[in-house]
Each structure stands twice: as structure tokens, then as C-alpha cells.
Length: 331
Ligand code: PBG
Image 1 (tube, helix red, strand yellow):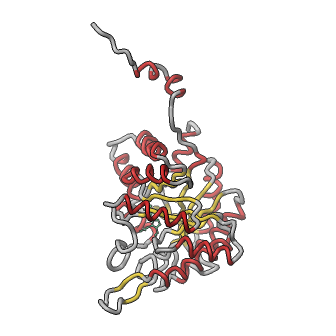
Image 2: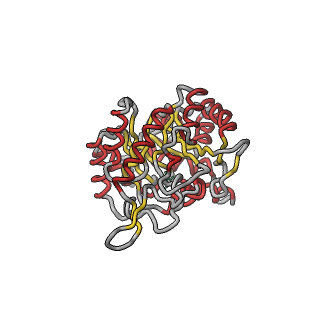
Image 3: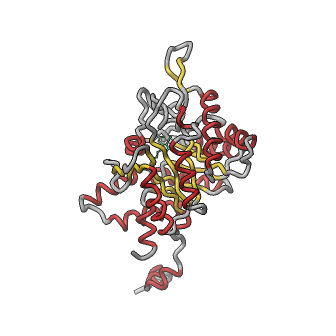
């Protein structure tokens, strides 16, 4: 009888040995927790398709922030659910808009907490697109006007920086958005404020529950003329490349789970921190299966987020952040 020369199981024999050779780990330091703020008082409305995620009014935000900080989470991503929408998304760049107001409040309660502001128009436009829409002269078709949208996005970013946001995260996928926002921030005196670019954002069905949450589904058409085709990987390199050239400080891939190949490629090709956005439907699917008793939520979430780290993500944006922080503390 001949025995195996190489025995992989030797290093798996005990928990101590396994932890010694473990290659990746999850840390609360790497998490960003998304929060949805809305107008009104005493509003804590659970998003039906995202159990455990709420629309919160400003008066209830402080308790949430205290909890997040208490769990050791160092960063949040703020989304606004405004009461007013119009064609130009004007409440996105209103100095007293919902995100701006929430940012000021959060910074007053928790100055150390990193506030990332999502910079987009889709929650604020009545048509639900991420930019301004005009009728194409030749075809009569409604299209999102790239350069006109940039002007409004720059205004949005500056107003968010003014309110105290530490990081501007443009998610609109207009061409040249990083350059435009970088120049705008610099001219306004915010050259130290970082840009986390949604560099590689796919036109994905995985945003469905978010659009319920943020009331931001496009009222006509879809986002395929500005977000990327899920079939493309080489194009992701071009998107990331242009953001690097334009001055992005971090590169995001979104969604995460179905695009781990892209996370890995960006990690290999660029030196900037790579961010993976574990988006709404990735969360909802786990929650639904767990509620049915079909999967073990904690194990599934841990394994999923670990896969993002293993693929190369330095930072993970996830609705599971509070749960993970508790589990990492041993609760
Ligand atoms: C805004 C934006 C979206 C998400 C984050 N920022 C929606 C979209 O592009 O339709 C999705 C986040 C999620 O699904 O969790 N543009």
C-alpha cells in the first residue's frame, strides 16, 4: 500500500492550526453600513423587501448612530429619501437637503464616524433616473444628458462636503463624473475630501429592493445606457482606468457577489483600495431564505462576506454590517 506524500489535512487537524494558516479574515474596520434617512418624525419604517433595514427620520437617527458606533463600525453610507422630487433632482443639492442635514447631525454626534455620502440624483428626480433627461433631437427618445447631469452632481457633491461628509461616493455612472467632482470639490476648497467612485457599476437586477427602499426606480426605460452590461469584464478595466486617471481615491465594484471576478481583477490591476458593495438583493435573498429556515443566516453571511475579502475587497458596504459586528464580538 502506498501512502499519500502530501497530506493537506495536517494543517486542518485542530482549530488552532486552522486559525494559524487562515489567509483572510473579516474585520469590523472594513465595513460600511448604509443608512436611509427620511423626513418626518418618529418614522422607523421597515423596508418590506429588506427586513432589518429601515427608513429613519432625523429624530431617530441619533440612537441608530450610537448603536453603530457602539458596535465598533467606523463608517456609514448615507442615502436620502426626500419628500420632494422634481425633474432636476433639486433636493439632492439643496444645502438643507436630507443627506446634508443628516450629515451635519451625524458629525455633531459622532465626529469620528466616517460619513460617506452617496452622490446621485435618482432618489431626487421625479423620473427616477440618475441624471437629467432630455429628448434626443433626432429620435425623440428621452436620454440622460451626461454633461448637464455632471453640473448637478458637482453641486450635490460640494453641498455634501460643506455639510461635513468625509467621502463623496458618486454612483451615477456619467462619463467624467470623477474628474468633474474632483475639480468642483477642489475649487470649492475641499481638496482633502476623498472620492469613492462607483467605478464599475452594472445595470443589475440586484438593486431591486434598494429601489423600493429609496423610491428610485426609473419611471420609464432602464439604466442600461449608463450602467454597465453584466456580460462585460474588459470594459470594467476601462471604467476603472478612467476613474484612476480622473483622481478617484477608491474604486468600487457593484454588485459584489455575482462580480467577484471583477473585484479580483481590479485588485490585481490597480493600487487603490477596492470596495465591494454587497447590494440589496444579495441581502434580501439571504434574509428570505433564513426566514424560511432554509439556510443558517450567520454562516451564510460570514462565508459570503469572506468571499469578497478573498477576492480582493479591502472594504465591504453591507446591510449585514451590524449583525456581523455583533458576531465578530462573539455575541
Ligand atoms: C443610486 C444607487 C443605487 C444603489 C446604490 N446607489 C440604485 C441604482 O443604481 O439603481 C443600489 C444599492 C443596493 O441595491 O443596495 N444610483
